[in-house]
Length: 294
Image (tube, rainbow, N blue to C red; front, side):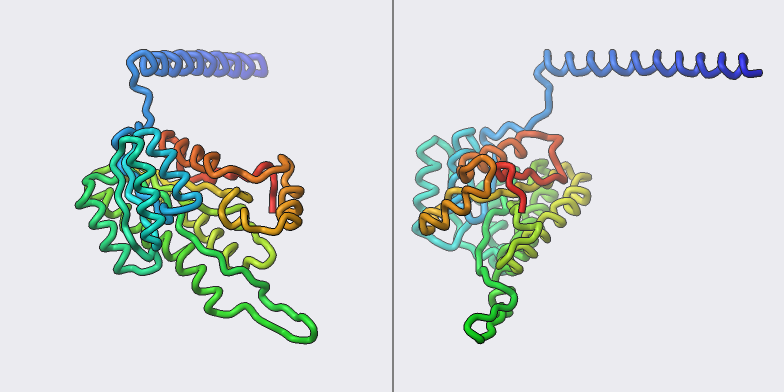
C-alpha cells in the first residue's frame, strides 16, 4: 500500500515537473517573440498628454521639463500665472506642446472646468500627476512660557483641502474623462514619507496617508478601464523651500539621511517617468528618501 502511494506521489510530481517545464518554455518563447517583434508593452511618452498639478514650480516644473525631454505634451496646472508661463516656455523649447491653466485644485467647479478645457485643447488625456500641495506645519498643542497654543482648524483644513481633496477631485475628473475617451494611461499621486507620521505635521501627514490609501483603492477600481494608479513618496528634496533654510537646520536634516544628501527634483521626475512608462506598475508607492524612514 505504501509502495503504491509512493508511486502515485512520484507520478504526480513527474507530471507537475513536465507541466512546469512546458509553462516555462512557453513563457520564454512568448517573451522572445514579443521582444523580437517589438511588442513589449510600455507607454511611449512621445506625443502623449500628461497633466501636472502644481506644475509651475518646484517638483512640478522639474517633472514637466523631464517629461518634455521624452516628447510628452504638457498641461500645467497651478495658481501662479507668472511661474506657469515660465514653465510652459521651458517645456516648449524642447519641441513639445505645453499650455498653462490657472486652477485651484481644492475648488470643485474649477477642476471640472479645467479638465474639460484641457480635453478640448489637446484631445486625448494619457496621464495625470497630482503634485499640487501646501504646508501649514504646527504642533497639535504647544506650551511655551506658560502659554498654550493649538493647531487651528484653518491650518488643518487648508492642507486637507489642497493635498487630499485636490487629489480626489483631479483624479475623479481626469479618470472620468479618460474613460469617456477610452484612453489608457496612468495617474500618479505624489505622497510623502511623512505619511507615516511626522512631528509638527498632523495635517500634512494625514493628507499624505490618505493619498497613499486612495492610490491603492483607485488602482483596483480603475484597472478594469486600463488606467493605472500609483504613487511616489519623496523624502527631503532640494527645492526653493529647503534652499531658504538656515545652514544649521539644513545640516541637521541631511545628517539624518543615510546617503547624507537631499534628493534632487530630477530624481523624483525620473521616478514619475518610470511609472508612466511601465505598464505593469500600479497600486504601489515608490519611496525615494535616501534610505531615511520617518
